[in-house]
Image (tube, rainbow over all chains, first blue to last red; front, side, top):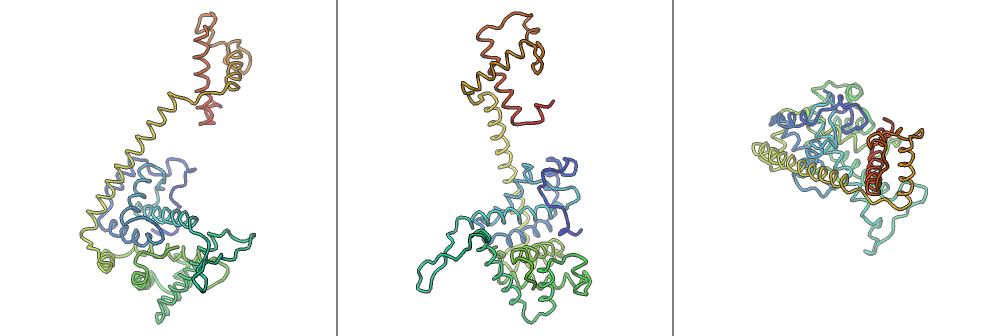
Length: 199
Length: 144
């Protein structure tokens, strides 16, 4: 299944029958395979950065919200993918909350705090800060893969919004080759960002 | 990389792609990657099970607290203001007189045509206040 194209989790306006019922959520949870639990562990670790969640608590929150029905799993979505997406969304919201608590200043040349210049009609200050951090991380990831042209091209295509078959076609590779490239990318990332990136 | 997209979107897509690749990775690869992070893959399953059980316990507790709150707010509706009370009293009068828009004399029928006592009327006003509170929580209820 192409998880990237799966419907977003937690869309409350859809009819009930399109989502798992509470008892089905518990069944799916109890029948997650040991391999899926390991995959979810890896994904959780990648999503902790920039949040104040301790190891294990992001997964706990995702499971809790699923059991309470605060986020609902579309029937056609694999349950592990749903939990992965829930963790991603919960972590993202938490980062945004924490960013709102950060004063919008930077350290000046002499260690003095300096207000970041922000035009009134631009993005709000938190968004500007997050966007700036994101730009730094994207550039860093690209740099990390120096010497691996295939991986760098893949990063460029993904960052350009390509996914699935369109992405593989643009790169001129099959699924097996793509999986192998992604494995190399994951390895490089795990060294630099063992808990994912902060934005 | 194109400048048309925001960096935050680029990073989000990279994050999706990596999560996807983890979900599609072989068991051996996943175990190897956990080990490289200093995590014993064999212990992960039991840890994740324990976390899930704790999450279920917390969810049950939260559900119970919400149910208690709902019962409590039903039993103890917020006191209506004198102005609200006056509006409720006229609604009650309309209902008792069976005017259009009221409840067509149903309550009078239940009382065999006799007048309400002051206590009955206050009780009926409390019931109406609760009914209006419920209707405001569930807009569809007022259309039924």
